[in-house]
Image 1 (tube, rainbow, N blue to C red):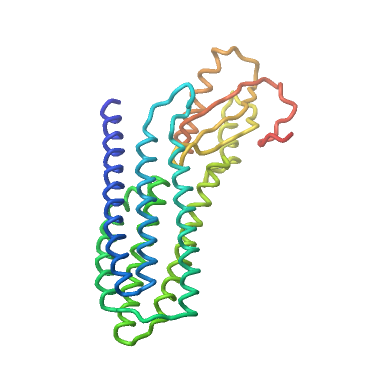
Image 2: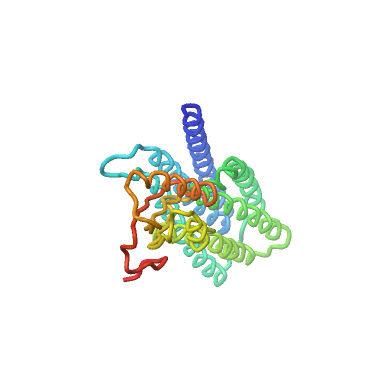
Length: 303
């Protein structure tokens, strides 16, 4: 148990370090792109810089949330601080949406009033941004599949990488063909892509905060499996929700086949817990035992 706990702590520290390194990288990219954007007069580069600035803040928020989530349970916070990562993911998604809307509005203005752009400077700075962003994306890509908070930060960084590629292509067109309108066009396309990617994170976050049934958990199947136990007549008033993006909580009323002593229900509880953990990956279970006492035995309680 101790070795497992140490491994988890090590992974937490490693994830936090990777997030911090990614945030610092983004700050450096932001400074370089703001300077390069002002010199080259490229909106795409400046928009990428602002995007990177927002992402630096977003990744730093993810880092702080990751640290806070490790705090112990207290009598005031009986579930601990695990959900802070969900709030951080929500904040990051909102920041990204605000940045994208601002950039699209600015791009439309540039369409109406195109300005000359120094393509070579734009190209060099964008390449530097691409390499740094690519490193940051690779750094946290594995962890992004396990944690929605890190996934939100990863989306920011991945969006930066895509936008850097687009800015490089735009710089090539501007330098060789003098096609200045491609600069705001790239900005708008990047914005649309990022809005699409952010939607999935927002949807997951809202589902968790609304305590919706976890994705891929079929409550009817859960009910059917538990009711196969010989001691159980039926289960009803079922609730299932995510504490964070990894931990599922479950509660229900269990109507027993016969009236039983409280001490006898321990064996039944162990069976239910084993089924829920092994078949449905549910780690936290609360059960209320009954013997034909509920008038309403619907799976979902209605008033």
